[in-house]
Amino acid sequence: MRISVTGATGFIGRHLVNRLLTADHEVVALVHTNSGEGTAGKGVTRAAGSVEDVPSLEAAFGGVTTVYHLVGLIAESGTATFEQTVVRGTENVVAASQAMGVSRIVYLSAMGAAADAPSQYHRTKHRAEQAILSSGLEYVILRSSVVYGPGDRFMSQLANLITRLPVTPVIGNGKYRLQPIFIEDLTEIMYRALTTDEAVGRVVDVGGPEELEYLEILDILKSVLGRKRLNFFVPMAFMGLMARIMEMAIKPAPLTRDQLVMMEMGNTGDVREMTELFGVKPVSLPQGLKSYMRK
Image (cartoon, rainbow, N blue to C red; front, side, top):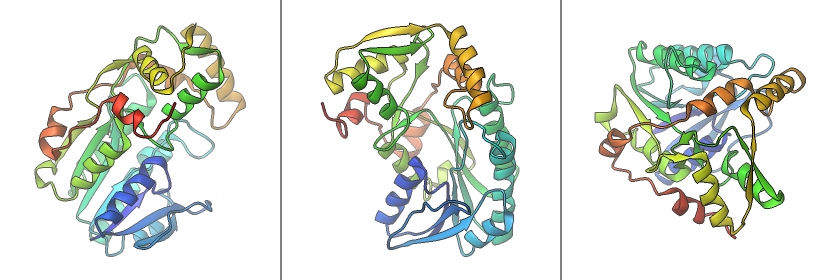
């Protein structure tokens, strides 16, 4: 099967491409026009383009049966905005898919996506979903919680802080809840969305087996790393001020006020439908971390 992946050079994209290749699919990896990065190897074709450029998408989708749409943003920078990249970009992916006769779109959205969500990130994810829902194409929308694994930006950064600092900074009270899912479990679910017809037309929450407070996640990570560290709590109001300054001074900002809003929201959902549809039972956070982290 010939499959196209947008966001193929990102953390999730790279793992998904590898999973598709193990099943002998032909992958067309969309690589940003201005990027020297790319996915290479037998079975992979690089297609230079952008979700902001419909002709380049049409070229990447030629002869393709399924499109995995993974492009997203966690912070805005220049012309890469939530409106332009997430909403308009998804509308362009839909238009190119319709023009090129693509059968199915698998879209990676986010838990908490809603029209009235507190964060701009989740509101624009919801608008992107609407473009797919109204497309007339077969679709599977996967709303994922935070994803971790080799090469991520979440657990790897936390591990670095725990390893290098005598105390571990915690924003706010640390009681916001997350449902981390291991990258191998997520990519297996995404892969099975190719052939699971019962999932077509569904919007499915995707997450790990545990709903954990951020403080609990830190404790598990410290245990896996074999490091004892005290937590240092930083007031949310102070971090909001720092985020505002970073937004003005650095593009993209390493921390934004929208991310703080998402943090306080938490990120959990009901994953029973995920398990029933795809037959994947995600590993626990300690199991996942131990599989690639060492003390």
